[in-house]
Image 1 (cartoon, rainbow, N blue to C red):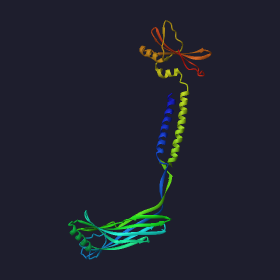
Image 2 (cartoon, helix red, strand yellow):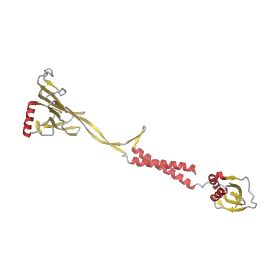
Image 3 (cartoon, one colour):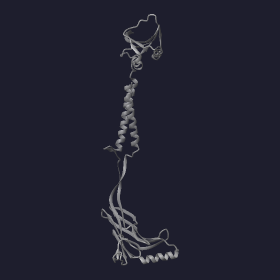
Image 4 (cartoon, rainbow, N blue to C red):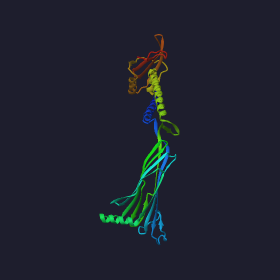
Length: 351
């Protein structure tokens, strides 16, 4: 019985795993959507700045500095700004149109804001454009002082921003790129320094299409697809279910083990086999209904269970007769049953 239960439990465990596999792989999409780029392009915007200063001992009478230098407001005169834009594509464009304008914004930290138009709306069919500006530091300071007198509000920091607004339209392979690009640089003025930020900008982009492909599945170097794992889970579950059904059918239909075999398994230590039939001189025989009752008698009397086996002929068939008994003084407690021969389909007969 135990030998049959082990493969039965093993099959049940495998079946549970395969059902869990069906559940898991049914929650994963069999296909994934991937974006395939057909064309790659990029928009670049750079601000080149040169600061004109008064001759000074600090800079050994130099008159031009770059944003990488330490710039003091008291020495600065003008800032020369060159804005350059470029559209690059890995394939020739059939048509390119760029609409742009450039705004200047002067603002006080946490306070007022003044908009200044640096370049009116323009259109070009070129893939590059360039604009140059000159910021007079004295004019900027005069504008700040004027606004402060009007608002009666001062600030420790002022920022001048240059913001290009670029609308790109380009046609590549009968497909159109339409994008907005607003690169901005800022110049910060404080009592101590003039600082520059946002001098270089880049925005990559692609034109492509979406493609559905099989969703891959990996496990310790093994590679397949989610769809294949689904089918494998279905097939494994069906096979295990069939094996389990077959095993259960054999388990149910197979005859039970001989009763004596079961008794020896349950009460083997208490049973003593007799070499021959016993004499029943002067003893009262009490028949018990079951082996369990005989075992109770054995425990209460602290006597062994004696087993006698004999072959008798009944209705033309040979059968085994088993007599198990416990002797207690003049009383013999007895449990008797008969087992048919293996070829006899009838069940065990007890008496």
